Length: 417
Image 1: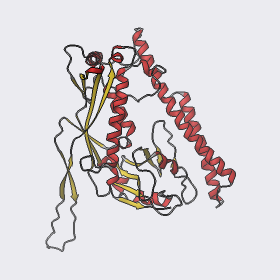
Image 2: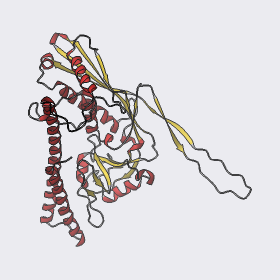
Image 3: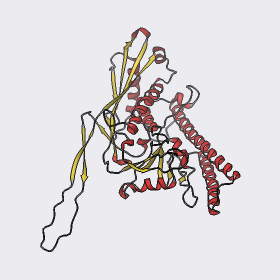
Image 4: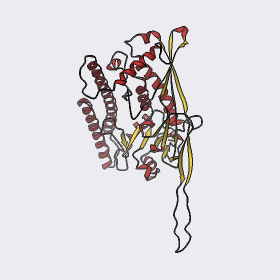
């Protein structure tokens, strides 16, 4: 639950937005442009909102770290837990993992951790924290590999926040997803006349298992030093590397030897001249929204997706009566809204530019992400024997594709200035 500090920051964010919105509505009501004073206030308020966004995020992360640290201290001092304790298997799994990391006799050289929905075991999803080692609560909180990796993958890839259909398979064999390419149609028929037949058409969409990997080398001294949060360090580094590679391909992949990226979908709207190269107008965004048919447009997984700088420009766009089309979220942790639909940032979406496909809108449940098993970790003492380094290898196998390519997601294409 969010603290009073976070709630006050959220309330201030809403207050600043309401003041900025009042300025825009006043100018629109008088059918005039902003005065120099109003323009200055408008820009200052938008800057304050960006600052508040940063403070809210930092506050929530700090509160989570503090709560996790309190839990660890309670366990050290033998205090009773206020909520259900983790299964005994979790402690055993952590001990086994640390033995494996040190290369103790009898431990395997390869280890695979899988997420079991029915029996979660020691796997526990948490929000990532950052900061200098030893300067915050995260440095004393035990961290395991798997949940840190998954948390990073979700954090860097906006696609994963938009509700795609995720398929987790045990093996990496080619996966065929059946889909319809045509629906039956009915026609009128005269009395006693022949009723025309019309069969639906089907085809298959293929999902492969592309491999993403990273090597991490760590000095033996770090492993032997129990004061160092080695597992958290490795998880952060591997998670960022795998997440950046896989997340980038989910957006920009060609579909040949890599995932079929979001930007390969059809163009819904080509922008008009706005004075800024590649920037959309209010009319462009409305046209893009309605280029997606109603069943997809009304889906729970219907989102806007764009880069951070592109989203910043949305705050300056108003409708035909001067009302801003961007709205801040009233719930901490939930996406802001654009034209009433949730808006997610993805660092891999193309920036605004002439002919750039910089904005995506539609039903992201029609985008399938395939993951093979868990994230695989392997350890070697021999790979860098001469330098006394221990080498860890992290591997992720996955793919992504658009199952319905008839228009579930549409793109905005920028025009020249």
